[in-house]
Image (tube, rainbow over all chains, first blue to last red; front, top):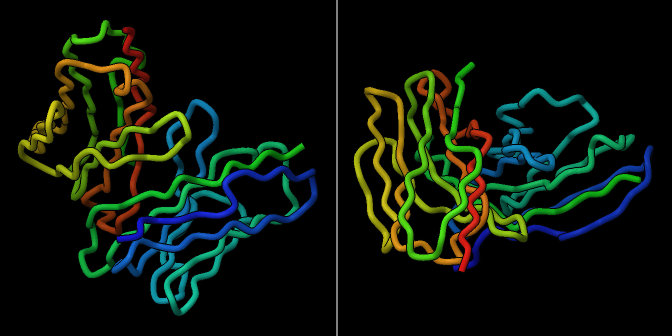
Length: 114
Length: 111
C-alpha cells in the first residue's frame, strides 16, 4: 500500500521565480491538503482539494495556487517567490467520505529561496 | 479560532525513562491526531484519537474531550523516540479535515 508521495524532496530557487510541487495521495484517498512548515513551527494549512476543486483555503496569498487531477494527485504552485517562502511543504491525504478522518502526510518538499 | 497548546516545549530524557506530553485545546474537536516528526521532516501518524484511550507498543494516548486535553505517554524511551511531537486538531465548528497544529514538543532521548 503506497503512502503519500511528494516530489521533489529538495529544491533551491531564487526570489521572483516560480515553483511547482507534486503530491500523490495514499491509495484509496481522494482528498489532498497542503501545509507549510517554517523552521521551528508547526505546519500551517494552505488549502485543500477535493473533486478537483479547492474546497478550503488558509491565510495564504493568491501567489499560492493548486490543482487536483482526475487521478487525485495534486500540485502546489507558488509564484513570485519571496525569501519567506522558504519552508517544508507537506502534502496530506484523506478520504472525504469520512469528513474528519485520519490524515496521512508525505515526506515533504524542502524549498529554499535565495 | 481554536488554540492548541503543547507542553512542555522541550524535554530531555535518559534512555529508559517514561514521559508524558500534554495537548490542551480551547474548543470542541472532531479529530485529534498525534504525530512524530522525524529528522527528515516526515510526520509519522501515532494516534488518531478524538476521544478515549489507545495503546500501540510503548506509546499510549488519552483524550478527554469534555475537558479539552490529550496526553501522549512514552514508556521506556529509546533514542529513536527523539524528534518533535505534534498534536493537531480539527475543530468541531470546522469539521472539514483541516488540522490546526500545536507548536510541538521537542524530545531528546540520551543514551
